[in-house]
Length: 108
Image (cartoon, rainbow, N blue to C red):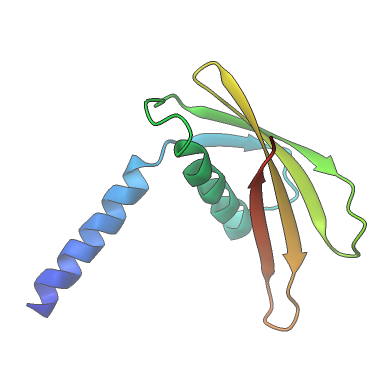
């Protein structure tokens, strides 16, 4: 029973990953896992907006000025289905645990 449950959980995770549309990201200060995680979060937030949109998304990044030391801010421009949406990304270093936190906010 445990093995069957594990199989279904694994299959669901794989299918969720396949269902997320791909995106090309250019211009971000993030790289590797942080860039992948940020892209995934932006696409999840963005996919909730136009549920019928299945187009590939193009993301361009513009750096923003932050008044906090060590904090990096960016504006992500997401183009899909003839519309453009903007998201403000904030990267905050977390030296106590070794890594970087990020937040995603849609700009109105």
